[in-house]
Length: 490
Image (spheres, rainbow, N blue to C red):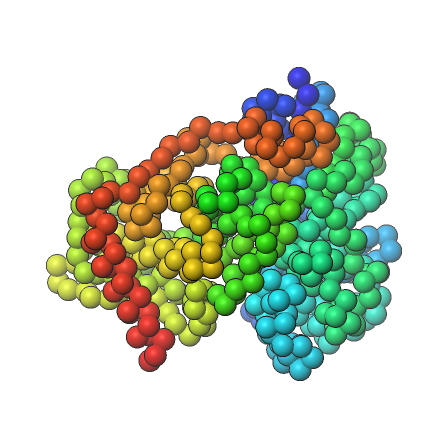
């Protein structure tokens, strides 16, 4: 049977998965790699690592399997590297985690308003995306700025090396703050402001375009003449593979941060500054919001309230075993999970996390449950604001680490009042799966995205809200909002 490779170049890991054309996972491989952090808010990567590990994974599949027909690529977005004419990096890549360019905001705002930037790119002006990072290079590394042949991103850099051809797909271009998401092209106005000729950026194109074939014997002695699809941003690949074709179903990806993703028929520019971008799916857009510290607050609690690793493990084991009892607990303790500020619906860098309404009868279990509730309250707040924009939400597809917690999934359903769909196989890598599905459509193995979604469809579990907690959580949610409003006025 023919086979398809899905590759995901993430921020800390590069993964590959091999599927047959019936959507069955055959094999997988993953390697971690480094980020170079600096005290000056710098976070860089070696771009050659992207290529080296990707080729290593491809070689593993080539040596072990036959009849591989296509490959697709999912990548981290907003990471940029200047290269010479031979596509060799002139410096380390500046990642999307890098915040060195904050001082360049003033330069940009003298030329164009923040609101206009948002209306062009779909992004509130941020120091961690390439618009300001390019300004930083121009100001601080003039020799590199003057000698750069091209500024490349993860996807076009790797594809150029593998196939000798590349584009930046629309979804990845949407994460650069350089791209006009309505015109689906680089913004001439923004490029002129930062004095970057558009020839220094790869052309943009749709995700399901075949960019070429991988037949580079220098990189792989065993390489097969497989077709490579144009890539997609990892969050859009995850949305594709999560069966989020219905616009009323919203995706919640849980990890260190939690990302909320909605399919839309148009780019939803909005007062909350959620980020619209061009979808993999034809004639569709995505809308992204985040709760940056939703996952990391759990580690903060465990690391600071337990001295030994064994104690953490036992605590987590016990609360899951006592799930029904803990789910029935009611108290006034409220947790605000905004440890790094609020990123919507209200944007405020100064607001911070807190426990409210503490009393002597509050235990560690109560505090932990308050954290679960606080994260869900923040998600509900974002959902409510999206609904005000006209986005209909009738269910949640939840993936990532938090799906393993019966408490978290039930509390999320109770607080949002929505059914929560969970993967039955919780080990799936949705970015790789989405990249494989994209490759299959690009190579005409499948007629369209609807068909490939049916073939790759997974078994799901459903958690429903408990009616008896509806009024309790509505009242507690309103108190959550009151606390945030008081903090904002302080």
